[in-house]
Image (cartoon, rainbow, N blue to C red):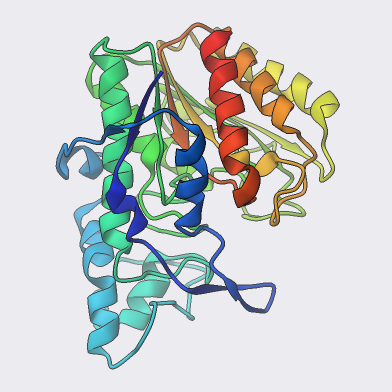
Length: 338
């Protein structure tokens, strides 16, 4: 399996985040990359496909905000990482804000996703990594490709960031597949947390199926999205399939949900599969509460691989750094040898 990566993804390095009412070390840190690179074969360098493919998902004003947010933060006489504190809960209109604090609230939805001096560089190259993997599959160079993306992307909507995510890598890859005539596209999200941004981007799109297996949002982040009754709307009615599962879920409960998602993908007659893979379903993940093992990661990969679809896997979460590389390798091995 071809793997793609960019060293520029190390640049995003916030020091801390606000979690459970207090400061904690930033969980989505560059050490995650080290853990994965230790176990994976030498990846190919991601190629620069420019801003064009990113703009098929994210509008220009949001991209400009990400590029210059930290500079504006410093210009206001601040230090460290940019973190918002005021968020509109209703009527989020397109206003022309002059202060960075307002912009952080306009484009963000949580206080756990700081913007550092290297955030735009890493997010841009995370998107290019996803595009490089997608292009390898689209061109026929590989049947399967893995995008070692960091920061992750599935919580990012078209014009907002949060959940450690700034650009939606899975959506960017899906748009590339659609543009190349490789639709319909199915996106399967197996991260512990619901991919609210991906769902939002394609909620009214009948050419993209979004199927997600995740922690019940009644108890877990992102709380406001990912409920079972969210099914898409307009022409996208029925193309969103959420399966929220309780804390403590083991393989015994997880496997039927996975099979149900795979059946939906088969029924959708997808030509291309994008997998948002999160290793935070692991039993010892510090910010999650499923009970899947490293062996189970291979089982997930194997079940997905049996679909025998051109597949782009995009890395999302996973915060047990000691086990992360092993879990990713187990998943990819299962996917490739199915």
